[in-house]
Length: 445
Image 1 (tube, rainbow, N blue to C red):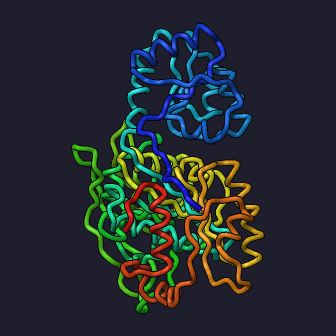
Image 2: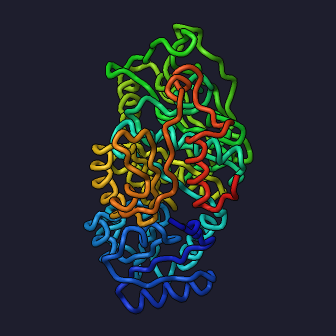
Image 3: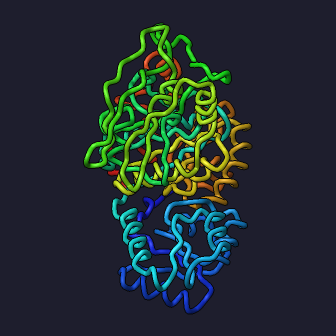
């Protein structure tokens, strides 16, 4: 099946959902002054139109309708009012997740600033890939990690970010064999105003390879203690001691000295998260010290490990897109607001399906769900195929474009257990990762 690479417009128009003619005319005037293109629509609008717009400008009625329709929260929502906003306007803004309420025409300059800010979010030409599995054990985490490694090695974009979206799967850093590499994990990350600097994030996250920053989920026990257990080479899975971190003058995150825990006594990433918390205040990124010793703090940290914030997910993804990065999200079999944020933001959603009957039955349900959130989907079929099913047959059954059909990779499971994933040599997994990257404009390897 022939496919064209995903088209990535560098500058997405603003979606305008304003019924009042005078207010809509004022939005047009400001947009013209800011040299921005707008698309005027009325509710309801599709999820991808909502998520794919450069920004969304709406009035109070449209905000309430969007919230009731379940439109996902995202960056770049602005509620406009004619004159000073009332309590009902602020309530509608909160319901839809607006980041700003602008009273027109008095605050026209504020709307121009919003146009300018969210124009930048498309100029970087970053690209977002979400990898989803048809049930547990489909291989989504492995494919996501392989795609990120290949993207970094081939310099598909300036930098690559791998985001772990499966908080109950043990951490994607284990897949890469980098569980002891110092740096932030999800439980350490606190984003206060919905923004984070891409440069700051790259500096703070552990590197899975040159040019690859990895944001992994943490590991913790329900009792609030550190998760200590034997890992590769007999050392405990876990990571670093808490680091003293400061804020530099250029808003970059500057990690301090890190040390690896001694074998058998190192704390898990979650324990480390009580020491460092990333913050963003007024557009300047930094760290703030968290209270680390109280039972309440440990309890909060455990909760953070088990649930990702959709707002934080969106902030991290958009920071990478803004910077022009390749962002790979491991959604795996997760469902919920954070997973939906990844799916809505993705330029390409990849569904990986083992060539087995039950997996294909699960894939039919998953594919229908994905189609409601994002039309840009592709399929990877992986072996072994005990019933002789072919990739083209699975693709026809699911109604999805086939990116690649690959055989099972011998020795992969033991390699992941002993040293972590690498894709330096050719093989089925590397071929699948390259097929995914080809869809977002990567040159042939």
